[in-house]
Image 1 (cartoon, rainbow, N blue to C red):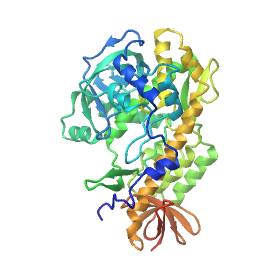
Image 2 (cartoon, rainbow, N blue to C red):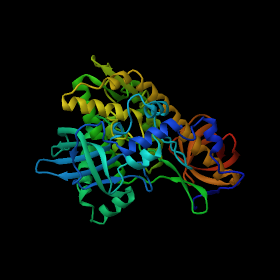
Image 3 (tube, rainbow, N blue to C red):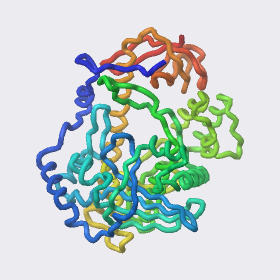
Image 4 (cartoon, helix red, strand yellow):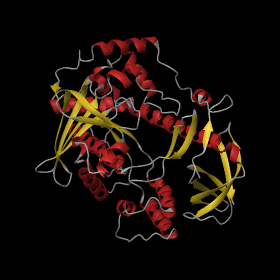
Length: 472
Protein backbone atom coordinates (compact mmCIF):
# COMPACT_ATOMS: atom_id res chain seq x y z
CA UNK A 1 0.00 0.00 0.00
CA UNK A 2 1.54 3.38 -1.01
CA UNK A 3 2.10 6.10 1.62
CA UNK A 4 -1.09 7.99 2.45
CA UNK A 5 -1.02 11.70 1.71
CA UNK A 6 -2.97 14.66 3.11
CA UNK A 7 -3.39 17.45 0.57
CA UNK A 8 -2.96 20.92 2.03
CA UNK A 9 -6.09 23.03 1.53
CA UNK A 10 -8.16 25.62 3.38
CA UNK A 11 -9.87 23.00 5.54
CA UNK A 12 -6.72 21.30 6.79
CA UNK A 13 -2.95 20.94 6.68
CA UNK A 14 -2.25 24.13 8.64
CA UNK A 15 0.01 23.95 11.71
CA UNK A 16 -0.88 27.49 12.77
CA UNK A 17 -3.35 26.34 15.46
CA UNK A 18 -0.76 23.98 16.89
CA UNK A 19 1.82 26.77 17.03
CA UNK A 20 -0.71 28.97 18.83
CA UNK A 21 -1.61 26.18 21.26
CA UNK A 22 2.00 25.93 22.41
CA UNK A 23 2.58 29.72 22.22
CA UNK A 24 5.52 29.27 19.85
CA UNK A 25 7.19 32.54 18.86
CA UNK A 26 6.60 33.60 15.27
CA UNK A 27 9.73 35.75 14.92
CA UNK A 28 12.52 37.54 16.76
CA UNK A 29 12.21 41.01 18.24
CA UNK A 30 13.94 43.98 16.60
CA UNK A 31 16.61 44.22 19.32
CA UNK A 32 17.57 40.57 18.83
CA UNK A 33 17.65 40.89 15.05
CA UNK A 34 19.74 44.05 15.24
CA UNK A 35 22.28 42.38 17.52
CA UNK A 36 22.44 39.35 15.20
CA UNK A 37 23.02 41.55 12.16
CA UNK A 38 25.80 43.40 13.99
CA UNK A 39 27.44 40.11 15.02
CA UNK A 40 27.46 38.92 11.41
CA UNK A 41 29.57 41.95 10.43
CA UNK A 42 32.36 41.14 12.90
CA UNK A 43 32.03 37.69 14.50
CA UNK A 44 35.73 37.46 15.40
CA UNK A 45 36.02 40.71 17.33
CA UNK A 46 36.04 39.24 20.84
CA UNK A 47 36.84 35.56 20.39
CA UNK A 48 40.62 35.84 20.65
CA UNK A 49 43.25 34.14 18.45
CA UNK A 50 42.26 31.28 16.18
CA UNK A 51 44.14 28.45 14.52
CA UNK A 52 43.90 28.48 10.72
CA UNK A 53 42.38 25.07 9.95
CA UNK A 54 40.89 26.02 6.59
CA UNK A 55 43.07 23.41 4.92
CA UNK A 56 41.26 20.51 6.61
CA UNK A 57 38.94 18.77 4.07
CA UNK A 58 35.94 18.90 6.43
CA UNK A 59 32.53 17.62 5.30
CA UNK A 60 29.06 17.83 6.87
CA UNK A 61 26.48 15.03 7.08
CA UNK A 62 22.91 16.20 7.78
CA UNK A 63 19.34 15.56 6.61
CA UNK A 64 18.65 16.68 3.04
CA UNK A 65 18.09 20.42 2.75
CA UNK A 66 19.43 21.29 6.22
CA UNK A 67 20.90 24.78 6.56
CA UNK A 68 21.69 24.94 10.29
CA UNK A 69 24.92 22.94 10.07
CA UNK A 70 26.56 22.50 13.48
CA UNK A 71 29.25 19.91 12.72
CA UNK A 72 31.85 19.10 10.09
CA UNK A 73 34.31 16.20 10.26
CA UNK A 74 37.37 14.45 8.94
CA UNK A 75 38.02 10.88 10.12
CA UNK A 76 41.47 9.46 9.42
CA UNK A 77 43.12 6.09 9.97
CA UNK A 78 46.52 6.47 11.64
CA UNK A 79 49.40 4.12 12.45
CA UNK A 80 48.06 3.71 15.99
CA UNK A 81 44.30 4.01 15.52
CA UNK A 82 42.15 6.91 14.33
CA UNK A 83 42.19 10.70 14.29
CA UNK A 84 38.94 12.69 14.33
CA UNK A 85 38.83 16.38 13.47
CA UNK A 86 35.39 17.62 14.49
CA UNK A 87 34.56 21.27 13.87
CA UNK A 88 31.59 22.69 15.78
CA UNK A 89 29.91 26.02 14.99
CA UNK A 90 31.20 28.68 17.39
CA UNK A 91 28.07 30.48 18.59
CA UNK A 92 29.92 32.35 21.33
CA UNK A 93 31.57 34.36 18.55
CA UNK A 94 28.14 35.76 17.67
CA UNK A 95 26.28 35.90 21.00
CA UNK A 96 27.50 38.60 23.44
CA UNK A 97 26.96 37.46 27.06
CA UNK A 98 24.03 39.25 28.65
CA UNK A 99 22.85 40.75 25.35
CA UNK A 100 19.54 40.46 23.55
CA UNK A 101 20.57 37.30 21.66
CA UNK A 102 21.74 35.64 24.86
CA UNK A 103 18.50 36.45 26.70
CA UNK A 104 16.32 35.26 23.81
CA UNK A 105 18.21 32.00 23.36
CA UNK A 106 17.86 31.26 27.08
CA UNK A 107 14.12 31.73 26.77
CA UNK A 108 13.88 29.38 23.77
CA UNK A 109 16.32 26.66 24.89
CA UNK A 110 16.49 24.85 21.56
CA UNK A 111 15.30 24.84 17.98
CA UNK A 112 11.85 23.30 17.53
CA UNK A 113 11.20 21.45 14.29
CA UNK A 114 7.75 21.45 12.68
CA UNK A 115 6.81 20.13 9.22
CA UNK A 116 6.05 23.61 7.89
CA UNK A 117 9.20 25.26 9.25
CA UNK A 118 11.28 25.38 12.41
CA UNK A 119 11.26 27.73 15.38
CA UNK A 120 14.99 28.47 15.57
CA UNK A 121 17.05 29.03 18.67
CA UNK A 122 18.95 31.81 16.91
CA UNK A 123 17.89 34.16 14.08
CA UNK A 124 18.32 32.56 10.62
CA UNK A 125 20.93 35.15 9.67
CA UNK A 126 23.11 33.24 12.16
CA UNK A 127 21.67 29.73 12.33
CA UNK A 128 21.35 29.29 8.55
CA UNK A 129 23.98 31.86 7.58
CA UNK A 130 27.03 33.28 9.28
CA UNK A 131 27.35 30.65 12.04
CA UNK A 132 26.42 27.62 9.92
CA UNK A 133 29.25 25.46 8.55
CA UNK A 134 28.05 25.81 4.98
CA UNK A 135 30.33 24.42 2.25
CA UNK A 136 32.92 26.74 0.77
CA UNK A 137 32.56 29.37 3.51
CA UNK A 138 35.24 30.29 6.07
CA UNK A 139 33.63 30.06 9.49
CA UNK A 140 34.68 30.49 13.13
CA UNK A 141 34.52 27.10 14.82
CA UNK A 142 35.53 25.15 17.89
CA UNK A 143 37.81 22.42 16.60
CA UNK A 144 38.09 19.12 18.46
CA UNK A 145 40.89 16.75 17.52
CA UNK A 146 40.61 13.35 19.17
CA UNK A 147 43.18 10.59 18.74
CA UNK A 148 42.13 7.01 19.49
CA UNK A 149 43.81 3.63 19.68
CA UNK A 150 42.97 0.72 17.38
CA UNK A 151 39.92 -0.17 19.50
CA UNK A 152 38.51 3.35 19.22
CA UNK A 153 39.32 4.40 22.80
CA UNK A 154 40.48 8.05 23.00
CA UNK A 155 44.14 8.59 23.84
CA UNK A 156 44.29 12.39 23.54
CA UNK A 157 41.95 15.34 23.06
CA UNK A 158 42.60 18.90 21.84
CA UNK A 159 39.97 21.62 21.68
CA UNK A 160 40.60 25.18 20.49
CA UNK A 161 39.11 27.97 18.43
CA UNK A 162 39.81 27.86 14.72
CA UNK A 163 38.83 29.05 11.29
CA UNK A 164 37.49 26.25 9.10
CA UNK A 165 36.06 25.77 5.63
CA UNK A 166 33.74 22.83 4.95
CA UNK A 167 34.35 21.36 1.51
CA UNK A 168 31.17 19.34 0.96
CA UNK A 169 27.61 19.10 2.31
CA UNK A 170 26.35 15.51 2.31
CA UNK A 171 23.22 13.77 3.53
CA UNK A 172 23.10 10.32 5.14
CA UNK A 173 21.79 8.50 2.08
CA UNK A 174 24.45 9.98 -0.22
CA UNK A 175 27.29 8.97 2.10
CA UNK A 176 25.78 5.50 2.57
CA UNK A 177 25.42 4.98 -1.18
CA UNK A 178 29.03 6.03 -1.80
CA UNK A 179 30.28 3.66 0.91
CA UNK A 180 28.15 0.79 -0.44
CA UNK A 181 29.54 1.43 -3.92
CA UNK A 182 33.11 1.35 -2.63
CA UNK A 183 33.79 5.00 -3.46
CA UNK A 184 33.60 6.92 -0.17
CA UNK A 185 34.70 10.52 0.15
CA UNK A 186 38.25 10.44 1.61
CA UNK A 187 37.20 12.52 4.62
CA UNK A 188 34.79 9.79 5.80
CA UNK A 189 36.39 6.66 4.34
CA UNK A 190 37.48 5.59 7.85
CA UNK A 191 34.10 6.44 9.44
CA UNK A 192 32.60 2.91 9.11
CA UNK A 193 35.56 1.23 10.81
CA UNK A 194 35.73 3.72 13.68
CA UNK A 195 31.93 3.81 13.96
CA UNK A 196 31.73 0.03 14.31
CA UNK A 197 34.49 -0.05 16.91
CA UNK A 198 32.82 2.71 18.90
CA UNK A 199 29.58 0.74 18.80
CA UNK A 200 31.41 -2.34 20.14
CA UNK A 201 32.82 -0.22 22.96
CA UNK A 202 29.36 1.16 23.69
CA UNK A 203 27.96 -2.35 24.13
CA UNK A 204 30.81 -3.22 26.47
CA UNK A 205 30.16 -0.02 28.45
CA UNK A 206 26.54 -1.07 28.87
CA UNK A 207 25.02 1.58 26.58
CA UNK A 208 21.36 1.01 25.78
CA UNK A 209 20.36 1.82 22.20
CA UNK A 210 16.72 1.55 21.20
CA UNK A 211 15.85 1.00 17.56
CA UNK A 212 12.17 1.86 17.59
CA UNK A 213 10.76 2.89 14.21
CA UNK A 214 10.92 6.66 13.74
CA UNK A 215 7.95 8.44 12.23
CA UNK A 216 8.81 11.08 9.66
CA UNK A 217 6.66 13.81 8.12
CA UNK A 218 7.68 15.15 4.73
CA UNK A 219 6.06 17.36 2.14
CA UNK A 220 4.98 15.95 -1.21
CA UNK A 221 5.27 17.75 -4.59
CA UNK A 222 1.55 18.65 -4.58
CA UNK A 223 1.71 20.53 -1.27
CA UNK A 224 0.57 17.72 1.02
CA UNK A 225 2.07 15.84 3.94
CA UNK A 226 3.44 12.30 3.72
CA UNK A 227 3.72 10.15 6.87
CA UNK A 228 6.25 7.34 6.66
CA UNK A 229 8.93 5.47 8.56
CA UNK A 230 12.27 7.28 8.62
CA UNK A 231 14.98 5.10 7.12
CA UNK A 232 17.99 4.70 9.42
CA UNK A 233 21.25 4.01 7.61
CA UNK A 234 24.44 2.65 9.12
CA UNK A 235 25.91 6.11 8.49
CA UNK A 236 23.33 7.55 10.92
CA UNK A 237 24.72 5.36 13.68
CA UNK A 238 28.38 5.96 12.81
CA UNK A 239 27.87 9.70 12.56
CA UNK A 240 26.19 9.67 15.98
CA UNK A 241 29.19 7.84 17.41
CA UNK A 242 31.48 10.75 16.46
CA UNK A 243 29.20 13.15 18.34
CA UNK A 244 29.08 10.79 21.34
CA UNK A 245 32.88 10.41 21.31
CA UNK A 246 33.22 14.19 21.46
CA UNK A 247 30.56 14.59 24.14
CA UNK A 248 32.27 11.98 26.30
CA UNK A 249 35.64 13.72 25.84
CA UNK A 250 34.02 17.00 26.90
CA UNK A 251 32.55 15.36 30.00
CA UNK A 252 35.99 14.03 30.96
CA UNK A 253 37.50 17.53 30.66
CA UNK A 254 34.78 19.01 32.87
CA UNK A 255 34.89 16.26 35.47
CA UNK A 256 38.67 16.56 35.78
CA UNK A 257 38.30 20.32 36.24
CA UNK A 258 35.32 19.92 38.62
CA UNK A 259 33.19 22.39 36.72
CA UNK A 260 30.67 21.74 33.99
CA UNK A 261 27.22 20.65 32.93
CA UNK A 262 26.51 17.03 32.01
CA UNK A 263 23.64 15.18 30.40
CA UNK A 264 22.77 12.51 32.97
CA UNK A 265 20.48 9.51 33.31
CA UNK A 266 20.36 7.18 36.34
CA UNK A 267 20.97 3.47 35.94
CA UNK A 268 17.77 1.40 35.78
CA UNK A 269 16.65 -0.28 38.97
CA UNK A 270 17.37 -4.05 39.13
CA UNK A 271 13.62 -4.64 39.36
CA UNK A 272 13.15 -2.89 35.99
CA UNK A 273 15.75 -5.13 34.34
CA UNK A 274 14.11 -8.21 35.86
CA UNK A 275 10.78 -7.01 34.47
CA UNK A 276 12.36 -6.61 30.99
CA UNK A 277 13.74 -10.15 31.17
CA UNK A 278 10.24 -11.43 31.91
CA UNK A 279 8.93 -9.45 28.94
CA UNK A 280 11.54 -11.04 26.68
CA UNK A 281 10.56 -14.46 27.94
CA UNK A 282 6.88 -13.75 27.27
CA UNK A 283 7.78 -12.63 23.74
CA UNK A 284 9.76 -15.79 23.13
CA UNK A 285 13.12 -14.03 22.82
CA UNK A 286 15.97 -16.04 24.40
CA UNK A 287 18.08 -14.05 26.89
CA UNK A 288 20.98 -15.86 28.57
CA UNK A 289 21.44 -15.01 32.28
CA UNK A 290 25.04 -13.83 31.75
CA UNK A 291 24.12 -11.48 28.87
CA UNK A 292 23.79 -7.81 29.76
CA UNK A 293 20.93 -5.58 28.65
CA UNK A 294 23.23 -3.80 26.20
CA UNK A 295 24.57 -7.02 24.67
CA UNK A 296 21.08 -8.48 24.42
CA UNK A 297 19.53 -5.45 22.71
CA UNK A 298 22.45 -5.11 20.28
CA UNK A 299 21.67 -8.54 18.85
CA UNK A 300 17.95 -8.00 18.24
CA UNK A 301 16.59 -7.62 14.72
CA UNK A 302 14.68 -4.31 14.87
CA UNK A 303 12.50 -5.39 11.95
CA UNK A 304 10.92 -8.28 13.85
CA UNK A 305 7.58 -7.66 15.63
CA UNK A 306 8.79 -9.18 18.91
CA UNK A 307 11.87 -6.94 18.85
CA UNK A 308 9.73 -3.85 18.25
CA UNK A 309 7.58 -4.76 21.24
CA UNK A 310 10.61 -5.28 23.47
CA UNK A 311 12.20 -2.00 22.39
CA UNK A 312 8.94 -0.28 23.36
CA UNK A 313 9.16 -1.90 26.78
CA UNK A 314 12.83 -0.95 27.17
CA UNK A 315 11.96 2.75 27.20
CA UNK A 316 10.91 2.19 30.80
CA UNK A 317 14.57 1.63 31.70
CA UNK A 318 15.60 5.03 30.39
CA UNK A 319 13.72 7.44 32.61
CA UNK A 320 14.94 10.43 34.56
CA UNK A 321 17.23 12.12 32.03
CA UNK A 322 18.34 15.60 33.01
CA UNK A 323 21.14 18.15 33.07
CA UNK A 324 23.51 18.19 36.02
CA UNK A 325 25.66 21.28 36.63
CA UNK A 326 28.51 21.48 39.15
CA UNK A 327 31.23 23.88 40.21
CA UNK A 328 33.64 22.52 42.80
CA UNK A 329 32.16 19.37 44.30
CA UNK A 330 31.24 16.59 41.88
CA UNK A 331 27.56 15.60 41.83
CA UNK A 332 26.32 12.20 42.97
CA UNK A 333 25.28 11.29 39.43
CA UNK A 334 27.80 11.94 36.64
CA UNK A 335 26.88 9.29 34.07
CA UNK A 336 24.24 8.64 31.42
CA UNK A 337 22.84 5.09 31.49
CA UNK A 338 21.85 5.18 27.83
CA UNK A 339 25.44 5.94 26.83
CA UNK A 340 27.22 3.95 29.50
CA UNK A 341 29.43 6.76 30.78
CA UNK A 342 29.80 10.46 31.44
CA UNK A 343 28.55 12.64 28.59
CA UNK A 344 27.95 16.30 27.79
CA UNK A 345 26.22 18.21 24.99
CA UNK A 346 28.78 20.24 23.01
CA UNK A 347 28.16 19.39 19.34
CA UNK A 348 24.96 21.28 18.44
CA UNK A 349 25.21 24.89 19.68
CA UNK A 350 23.20 26.31 16.77
CA UNK A 351 20.23 24.21 17.85
CA UNK A 352 20.72 23.72 21.60
CA UNK A 353 21.46 26.28 24.32
CA UNK A 354 23.53 24.22 26.76
CA UNK A 355 26.23 23.39 24.18
CA UNK A 356 27.49 26.98 24.10
CA UNK A 357 28.16 27.01 27.84
CA UNK A 358 29.67 23.52 28.04
CA UNK A 359 31.96 24.33 25.12
CA UNK A 360 33.24 27.50 26.79
CA UNK A 361 34.15 25.48 29.89
CA UNK A 362 36.11 22.96 27.80
CA UNK A 363 37.93 25.73 25.92
CA UNK A 364 38.91 27.55 29.12
CA UNK A 365 40.05 24.42 30.94
CA UNK A 366 42.06 23.19 27.94
CA UNK A 367 43.79 26.58 27.61
CA UNK A 368 44.54 26.78 31.34
CA UNK A 369 42.30 29.83 31.74
CA UNK A 370 39.61 30.61 34.28
CA UNK A 371 36.12 29.71 33.16
CA UNK A 372 34.35 32.99 32.22
CA UNK A 373 32.15 34.36 34.97
CA UNK A 374 29.13 34.58 32.65
CA UNK A 375 29.43 30.82 32.12
CA UNK A 376 29.77 30.05 35.84
CA UNK A 377 26.74 32.21 36.58
CA UNK A 378 24.67 30.31 34.00
CA UNK A 379 25.27 26.90 35.58
CA UNK A 380 22.48 27.48 38.08
CA UNK A 381 20.03 28.43 35.34
CA UNK A 382 20.75 26.53 32.12
CA UNK A 383 19.82 23.00 33.33
CA UNK A 384 16.26 24.01 34.21
CA UNK A 385 15.88 25.92 30.95
CA UNK A 386 17.05 22.91 28.97
CA UNK A 387 14.71 20.55 30.82
CA UNK A 388 11.77 22.84 30.09
CA UNK A 389 12.68 23.15 26.41
CA UNK A 390 13.18 19.37 26.09
CA UNK A 391 9.66 18.86 27.46
CA UNK A 392 8.21 21.40 25.04
CA UNK A 393 10.11 19.94 22.07
CA UNK A 394 8.80 16.44 22.83
CA UNK A 395 5.22 17.71 23.12
CA UNK A 396 5.45 19.68 19.86
CA UNK A 397 6.94 16.76 17.98
CA UNK A 398 4.26 14.38 19.26
CA UNK A 399 1.48 16.86 18.49
CA UNK A 400 2.73 17.33 14.91
CA UNK A 401 2.83 13.58 14.34
CA UNK A 402 -0.61 13.09 15.92
CA UNK A 403 -2.01 15.88 13.74
CA UNK A 404 -0.68 14.43 10.50
CA UNK A 405 -1.84 10.97 11.52
CA UNK A 406 -5.35 12.36 11.93
CA UNK A 407 -5.22 14.23 8.61
CA UNK A 408 -3.83 11.22 6.75
CA UNK A 409 -6.40 8.78 8.15
CA UNK A 410 -9.48 11.02 8.21
CA UNK A 411 -10.83 9.65 4.91
CA UNK A 412 -10.04 6.01 5.72
CA UNK A 413 -12.43 5.27 8.60
CA UNK A 414 -13.44 1.64 8.33
CA UNK A 415 -10.25 0.69 6.50
CA UNK A 416 -8.08 -2.21 7.60
CA UNK A 417 -4.33 -2.06 8.24
CA UNK A 418 -1.51 -4.35 9.34
CA UNK A 419 -0.08 -3.57 12.77
CA UNK A 420 2.31 -4.83 15.42
CA UNK A 421 1.21 -4.93 19.07
CA UNK A 422 3.81 -3.09 21.17
CA UNK A 423 2.16 -3.24 24.59
CA UNK A 424 -1.03 -4.98 25.63
CA UNK A 425 -3.46 -4.86 28.56
CA UNK A 426 -6.70 -6.79 29.01
CA UNK A 427 -8.86 -5.00 26.45
CA UNK A 428 -6.56 -2.49 24.78
CA UNK A 429 -3.08 -2.18 23.35
CA UNK A 430 -0.54 0.23 21.95
CA UNK A 431 0.08 -0.64 18.32
CA UNK A 432 2.37 0.33 15.47
CA UNK A 433 0.50 0.50 12.18
CA UNK A 434 3.12 -0.33 9.59
CA UNK A 435 1.87 1.64 6.56
CA UNK A 436 1.40 4.50 7.11
CA UNK A 437 3.66 4.50 10.18
CA UNK A 438 1.19 5.31 12.98
CA UNK A 439 1.42 4.64 16.71
CA UNK A 440 -2.03 4.45 18.28
CA UNK A 441 -4.35 2.75 20.76
CA UNK A 442 -6.31 -0.32 19.74
CA UNK A 443 -9.30 -1.99 21.38
CA UNK A 444 -9.61 -5.76 21.45
CA UNK A 445 -9.45 -8.80 23.68
CA UNK A 446 -6.56 -11.23 24.07
CA UNK A 447 -4.05 -8.99 22.32
CA UNK A 448 -0.46 -10.14 22.75
CA UNK A 449 2.66 -7.98 22.64
CA UNK A 450 4.82 -8.80 19.64
CA UNK A 451 2.11 -10.26 17.42
CA UNK A 452 1.19 -8.88 14.00
CA UNK A 453 -2.55 -8.32 13.64
CA UNK A 454 -5.09 -6.73 11.32
CA UNK A 455 -6.77 -3.63 12.74
CA UNK A 456 -9.71 -1.49 11.64
CA UNK A 457 -9.74 2.30 11.89
CA UNK A 458 -12.85 3.17 13.90
CA UNK A 459 -12.64 6.91 14.54
CA UNK A 460 -10.63 10.04 13.74
CA UNK A 461 -10.88 13.35 15.60
CA UNK A 462 -8.85 15.86 13.60
CA UNK A 463 -9.28 18.71 16.11
CA UNK A 464 -8.16 16.60 19.08
CA UNK A 465 -5.50 14.81 17.00
CA UNK A 466 -6.76 11.36 17.97
CA UNK A 467 -7.26 8.16 16.01
CA UNK A 468 -8.76 4.90 17.25
CA UNK A 469 -8.46 1.33 16.05
CA UNK A 470 -9.96 -2.03 16.94
CA UNK A 471 -8.83 -5.53 16.13
CA UNK A 472 -10.32 -6.53 12.77
